[in-house]
Image 1 (cartoon, rainbow, N blue to C red):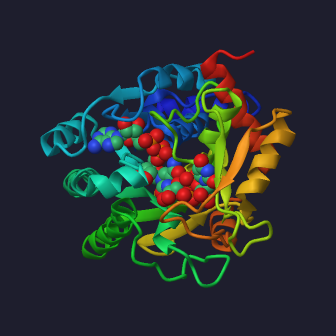
Image 2 (image 1 turned 180 degrees about the vertical axis):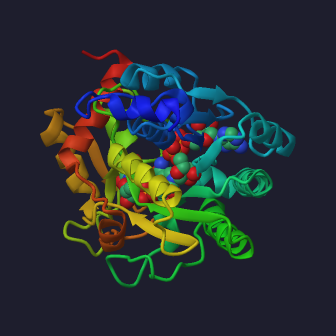
Amino acid sequence: MRWHLIAVHIIPKFVVQRNPVHLMKQILVTGGTGYIGSHTAVELQNAGFEVIIVDNLSNSSLEVLDGIEKITGIRPEFERFDLTEMHKVETFFSKYPKIEAVIHFAASKAVGESVEKPLLYYRNNLVSLINLLECQIKYGVKNIVFSSSCTVYGQPEILPVTEDTPRKDAESPYGNTKRVNEDILHDTIVANPQLKGIALRYFNPVGAHPSALIGELPLGIPANLVPFITQTAAGLRNELKVFGNDYSTSDGSAVRDYINVVDLAKAHVIAVNRLLENRNKAGYEIFNLGTGNGVSVLEAVHGFENATGVKLNYKIVGRRAGDIEKIWADTTFANEELGWKAEKGLEETLLSAWLWEKKIRGIV
Ligand code: NAD
Ligand code: WQD
C-alpha cells in the first residue's frame, strides 16, 4: 500500500479533513469569477475538489477570489485569459495535465446586447466551447458540464417543461448560442465516445451566498428582475417597472422558476461526480435545474417585501419585448437521476440577494 493511502486510513472518520493536495481531483471552472461560477467554486472546494478558474474578467473582478477564499479557506488557482484564444487554451491544458473535468460557465449572457452585437455573442460563446472541446480531446480531459438555459424552450406549449420538451427557435442570438452549443457538445460526444458531457438547463438563477461574501454583480442597469429589485430597494433605482399585468397567469404578471444560486451550484458538484464516477446513463445528458414552482413577478416583489421588510416602489408598465408569458421546470429527472432537489425557499433566496446588495452598497 502506498504511504498516502495508509495516512488516509488511519485518520479517524469524524475528523473533518481535506484531502492532501496531491489527492484532490482538479476541476477547471471557466467563468469561475462570475456569478454562478463563483458559487460553484465554493461548493466544489467544500466537496474536496481542487478548483482552477479561468476567466478573462470581462464581466467579473478579481476580488471575487477573496470572497471564495473567505468562505472556504482556500484561494482557487486563477488564470486570466480569453477562451477564444486557442493558443492560450492550449498552453493552459499543457500546464495543467491533471485536470479531470471542465465546468464551462464562461459566456456572454446579456440577451439585449446579443441582439445588437450578434457576432460578439456567436464568437465568444461558440469559439470558447469549440476551443475547450478540441483541447479536451487532445489532452484527454474526458468530462464536461455545460451551462445551458431554459431559454432553449422558448414559450413551451405544455408546462412544466421536461427535458424532452422540444426546443424552439431562439428569441435572441444569446439564446441561439445556447442551442447551438448544446448541439456542438452532442455532436462532438457522438464522434468522440471517450468524451462525456452534461448540459444543465438553468431556469432563473437568483440570490447570493448566505455569507454575503459573493453574489451577482451586474454591470450598469440590471436587465434581470432580482438585481433590479435589490437596487431599487437600495435606492440606486427610483422605481421597479413590472413588465405586464395582462398575461394569462394568476395575477397577470409573467411567471418564472427562480432557483437559488447555491442550490444550483450544488447540482454542478453532483453532475461532475456523476461523470467522474461513470454513473452517467448516456454520453450526453441534459438536466433541467429549477425549483419546479412558477412564481409571478408580483409574487417575487411581495416575497421580497415580506422577507426583508423593505417596501418596493414599483409600477406596472407594458410588456417587455421578447418576454415569454410563463415557464417553470419539471425537475423529476434531476430529482430522481441526480438525487438533487432545490432546497431553499423563495423568501430565503430573496433575503440573501438583499443581504448581498446591502453588503456591496455599505448599507447597515
Ligand atoms: P457571469 O457573466 O457572471 O459569468 C460568466 C463569466 O465568464 C464572467 O466572469 C466573464 O468574465 C467570463 N467570460 C466571458 N467570456 C469569457 C471568455 N471568452 N474567456 C474567459 N472568460 C470569459 O454569468 P453567470 O450568470 O455566472 O452565467 C454563467 C453561465 O450560465 C453562462 O454560460 C450563462 O449563459 C449561463 N446561464 C446564466 C443564467 C443567468 O440568469 N445568470 C441563466 C441560464 C444560463
Ligand atoms: C424575469 C421576469 C420580466 C426586470 C433572462 C434570460 C434567460 C436567462 C435568465 C440566461 C420577466 C420581469 C424583469 C424588470 C420586470 N438567462 N421583469 N421588471 O427574462 O426570464 O430570463 O435571464 O440564460 O435567457 O432571457 O429573466 O430576470 O430578466 O425577468 O418585470 O425590471 O421579470 O419581464 O417576466 P428572464 P429576467
